[in-house]
Each structure stands twice: as structure tokens, then as C-alpha cells.
Amino acid sequence: MDDQLLLRYSRQILMPEIDIDGQNRLREARVLLIGLGGLGSPIAMYLAAAGVGKLVLVDHDVVELSNLQRQIVHSTADLERPKVESARDHLLALNPHCAVEVIDHRLDEADFDRLLPDVDAVVDATDNFETRFSINHHCVVHRKPLISGAAIRFEGQVTVFHPADDDSPCYRCLYSSDSTVAQSCSQTGVIAPLLGIIGSVQALETLKVLMGIGQDLKGRLLLLDGFSMEWQTMRFNKNPKCPECGG
Image (cartoon, rainbow, N blue to C red; front, side):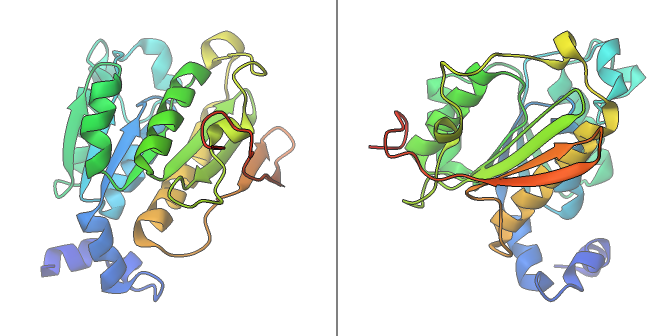
């Protein structure tokens, strides 16, 4: 690591929990980030700024005017551009040492099978249950850490799944396909800074997973009520009857 990189990441390297070894782990890490909207924007920016070596960005949408209230990786000049291209350009301007691969379509089974063996973590920043169930399924199959977050109205949540650990629950342990009602911010609204808070927590959990430090949110669901500004933690266990990971 040359002097410029040492200076760029100096505030992280100063921390004994990270040091040069941790920063080198970030530099060698690859992350698959699915969704470049309200959550994906701060996640992508913090992962790139922190020195993650490669980000694979996935989103099939283009930037719309209504996005700009909360999707801070995009700007007015990016309207009608593919979100992955807009995000890539802003991330490389922030940190040219971060390699960025973009995918501008929904991932199918072949995409997951191609991508997941080469990444160290998957970050779910999507906004619908169908996609989240699919991401969870492929992370279980490939035994890849999954950092999951959601935010709507004034409420947000974050958790981490470790399919490689036999005692780790998965997303289907927490949510069954027949007990959830799909909602999105386009239907019910969302306050802009909430996405920054939840996305930042996802980014922090991702960095901890990549470096193998601290205690992440495995088996815990972190809940935020932004209206009353109250945090709660709900513990949950692996469901032995889970159709995805329960065997």
C-alpha cells in the first residue's frame, strides 16, 4: 500500500481493530450490491470510500426525478441514465482505487451462479419480497454472507445472515412467503434520511463481515422507529422447519 493509499485510509488504519491487515482485507474484498436506490446509494458510497476493492452493482432501473429525494448517489444531471452507470461514475470520482462492475438487468439463476463464487459478501438493498427471497435462496446455496436492510415510512431494519454457519438463520426463517405484504416507498412513502441511516448500518455491517471483526447482527434484527427515534433489537433463531435452510 503506497503513501497515498495510507493517507486516504489513515483514519481507519489508526484503529487497532482494523490496522493495515484489516485495510488490506477490504482492498482484496469483492461485494455484490443489489439495488442502487435509497439504501444502495449510501451503502455503495461508504463501501467505495472505505476501500473495498471491487463492487459489483446491480440495478435495472433508470434515474427518475422522484428518486433524487433520497437516492444520493445520483444527481439531477443523471436523469434517465441507468442507475448502475450513474452510481459507477460517482463512486469512481469518490475513489478511483475501487473497481466497479455494473449489471443493468435483473439477475437470473445463471447470473447468481456466475457471480456468487467470486464475492465475499452480498448486500440486499432491494425493495420487494420476491427479490429478497431470491437473493436469500442463492446466498444459502452458495453459503455467502448476506447483509439485509429495509426502510419505509419512518421505520427501518437491518440484519446479517451467515449461511456458512450451521446455526445461522436465513431470511426465510424471519419472513415466510405467505405472511408478508409487499409494500414500497412509491406506495406508502419514506423520509429521506432514514435511508441514509439504515444504509449506513448495512455498510458498517458489511465492512465488519469483510474484515472479520466485531460482532455483527447475525441472529438479531435491529429495528429503528425514526418517528420516535427509538432503536430495538429482536433476537431470532434458525427455524428447523425453514423451507430454505432448515433441511
